Image (cartoon, rainbow, N blue to C red):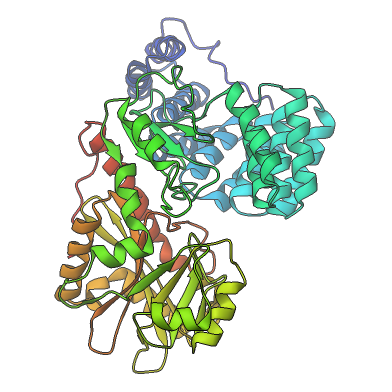
Length: 555
């Protein structure tokens, strides 16, 4: 059966057909609101129009779904496509579009099944095949995605976008050389492909080839000084300008900026000169992503100057990021009732770190912790028992500054260590995760939580009701920390000691929030609450009224 819908057998003066034609004219002219109204009137008319039939009604539902997709109303679009498919299940494009709607609402696995249905009807349907790749990548089925992409590349060897996607798939499979080769092929096919050049820069930087990374970034910047990510709706609600520095720590935004109703133009600050942003045009919100004050000390003044040129409010003012180094936070937060701030000593590169010198420098006793400045996570982060151990640790990386940190025992009564993460979004304090381990150095990914149901149950309870764990006094301390730090979006890793005091480990805007929680699905509501709060904060900064008024998620 042919896919195309046709109402040619319906009389031209049929009210249903007239509304359909009017809706199509509005849609073609970009008048989405008027098109929706016309298609809805067509559906209403079909109930009493004797000339109406399943074909024309299905077409109205399908066209209405397209309008809702364009307007960003994804759940309503999905309902329209389902209504069309109930009447005309042979519609390949409708199956594909329904898959698109689900993919954009985070239901990648369900979208995969819908693209497969489309391909059963038409195995060569290109949109279904390419969108299936996106769904497979989102669901982290990278081996299958790569195999499908190789098929597509054979059919269209001159398609630069297929090569770009192959580069991303190979990167996720840790096939670094192949990833770079595909990105380079994409650039060869499309010399204006700045996105692939940015990827080449990122991959080479990650592999330690800094000079090659700089060359790739510089080439990309000449082609396009900013990376444009389009909204999922047209027109977008507003436009965001994001500032980041490839060779410094940045706020992770892969999840935060995914499937949003606003355009995002991201500008890379690579050298000392200001990038050419004349082509960006009007923006409503500036978001500074440069977040690691140790790594980005030289870039923050440039970011501050650039942010001010747009005359808009700035989320995470670069001037305030400088106060989030570990030693600066230790100086900023003391005196908060019920809050313990470990003492921190910064040792710059070149400092005499002999045992004799350390004995005169250290303001606190052993054991203590040490790590290179500008690092996160558990790498190169150790607990040391005496000056000899500390001197040996510091000597391993003499070119780096180091932080020496007072150790505060935060073990719970059951002997386990619990590290909590909250994300501050505007005025909200939202729980992100709880990591439970049997050692002081706790990171969610290195714990045994995936194999311990009781740990998962405890984390789920914390995420659902953090006030059941953190007392009013603890929340008062968190609110004071938010006020003193002064950023719009940042995170805190903390614990609770045996007396219920808040123990601060780290406070900065570099903390990761992601939705890759297949092993911990109970985390999804908390993760999506953070993203929703972030979207609403930007919307309010853009001068728009909130879309949803929800009760606060923190005391």
